[in-house]
Image (cartoon, rainbow over the protein chains, first blue to last red):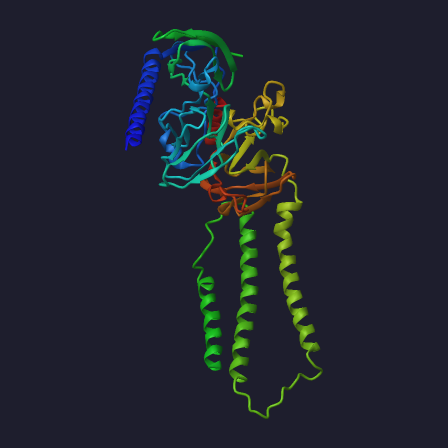
Length: 248
Length: 267
């Protein structure tokens, strides 16, 4: 009898310690997380972006009838802001922080014969959904490095078929994605470890949930390649990292 | 039972000939200068093959009817001299028929494949790749720039692998996803495949030609009727084959000039 009480008391203490430890750990990381913000610009005249002729797919052509779309190798918004640049922490992230996988499942949508978003940034092992919003079939085909850690695949999605869930198991910046049915469709999936961001049409980005520390921040753009910068993030203090890419 | 079978054979044969004799499934109206010859060849072939088919089926039916209930003591009779004479006669007859079709067909075949395009023919290149066609016009200089397969990049719409920075001839080349041609102008089509075998088929134009990987195939034709037609791939080329198509727009010369100018501005 007494042994049983002792055991129960010990278990209760252990449980209390474990919960307290978890609670404190959560509390610490929650208060200390900072963020990195910045603006990415293009210096110079952006190269000519060819318009895309979708006459092969009359539905998609109609969708873009009022505003013909172009290729998206260099998309420059207001004040020279460069869109679709992936920004991530390439060095300095602790192993624990790097291994956390966000619970959000972003979408990679095939809409009016375009990939929306054009560039999707993902964490390693983060789930994302591939969606077909068109009344036409698509065959999505990501093409990681042939001898690399990620494997190539392609999948057909007839109109009305449900979205499917995918993950990438290893870091790769970036995996080109094409459609096997529509040669003009092109996008990228950037798989990184830890918090990341993608610039919007003003060239601004925010990386949320960065623990305090010294980091190397890398910005990747599909035409101009990568740039890096050292950044120090303090507890609860946002750090800034602006980049400028030079037009070739 | 055998008599019923004999009648069924004859009924099926005649029934299947009805839609052909009545022209139920006509090909679309011809819009080319050479199409009439092809149509003529097709109906000749249909007529000859059709008559042979009906004759063979009806004779088969008659024989089944006639010999369905042989008497037990009946003997199988052979033709005088055995079957050899009959076989030789059949071979000669069929051979002559096939040869005649071939000889009649030579005219249109030679006009299409053994005669080079005239000097005034307009060159257009067509590249077939999984799963779309892309067309190239040489631009004002009349010359196609060289192809660099390693430069092919679909993300920048460089479907042909042109090096516009270094090749002077490529600078004014116009690459399009739609094929426009002026009516009543001979077109010299230069065809090549980027990957696997494909086919260029425009039913109205009476043109159906395979792309063979590694070969530059040459073709010429003249369209006479303004309109929009479908170009389809008729060689199973992979998963997206069903969706491999482009449009052919036959225009007046002025409309074509405007179209080409517009396309050039978009390069």
